[in-house]
Image 1 (cartoon, rainbow, N blue to C red):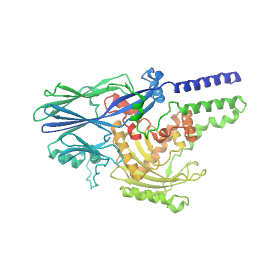
Image 2: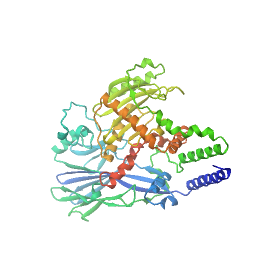
Image 3: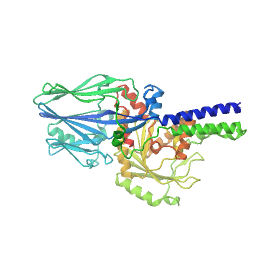
Image 4: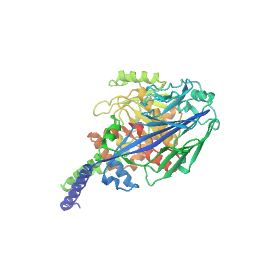
Length: 546
């Protein structure tokens, strides 16, 4: 039985913990930056070669306590939670080799996902996606000219002939959206250019070399990685170019030198002004502490019976999740409160982007808490994704704003989604580890599609999976039913206290906006595990969320 003496002891502990958090928050901050390799592109032709080394800087503000924490286990999670992490814009270092001269050009704010091509016989890199805000660049013969933000033209759809799986080429249906589109690839080959794109982490299992044969010399590009005792950065990588005609013969093009101290002014100046500063104080944990103390007071005050319904809340919530769902046809006229102008505007935008309407429906679930809603379901065959325009009509609080969502399914049970609706507080309780997504309030369908393709491309690279191209209505319905099973299982395994804290943090507006807009699930963990095993570049999706 919890006595008043024990309550006093627990209250003192609560105050001590809160005071520790407050003291932690006011410690002097230290600012550090670390350069991370994000990709390498190599082009060579006759007697000249280009090596483009892309890297991004990860910055953090920390303090004396965080810097002394072990770099393993749960200590890493604690250190990550307490720091202010920021991702700086991408920088491309271009090297031009001709004869004995190796020229270096720094191209800050370069495009993140370049599309390479030849213009007037010279290399050009432009943005592959409209959402990429970086600047392109092109070789002029003496240096690089910066190009505007105009994206490279996306190839127009054409009729494809399907092949058996064992006869398909590696590029598959997404070849046109790689770093070198099919038409540009042919132009490069016809002009005698050779090219190679590397993630930068091919040397995780041992040094690797790329021979570059020029007319007057032979060069070798080498990648070497060394393992470090850090979970977030398990490898340091160096990139070197070796040739007998260079002085010295081995030139270091990139080297991960670990964390480097920088002044606060540089930390703030290099930060994207649209990034919201993260708090070093874990708000959700404070909410949990307040709720916990409140429950203790109620129990000692003789009103424990009031709490009994709460004790079975998790079980009742799990039972409230639907187990099946049907999709009867519906018409907009069935819903007088439907936002018809917004529905028609989103429909026109999706159809202009190549989406085809599959069904107008009002899904029915075997759950009394599932609200009526109108849904218009689209599919994009070429991009392998679905578009859903949906507006729920809950019995309490009036209709929720109509929103547009794009989603796609990947191998191994992964799915990626983007939405232009505001995040709902209840979504904190039903998240699944392999259903990742981002909310982009007020984004247009065109912006959603661009961000979706960029996010899916990055996730596929980091996780080593491929998109599922089936966009039939049957596929959509089956995956929706599978999602219900996954939600129930995820809720059973979830730490309900943590989920409840996040729910009320959202409900009360205490949670950081950035944390509400994105859910990455197991994506960072599995991507870093693959990186540690030498199978991928690690988690590189943070920049997609900025």
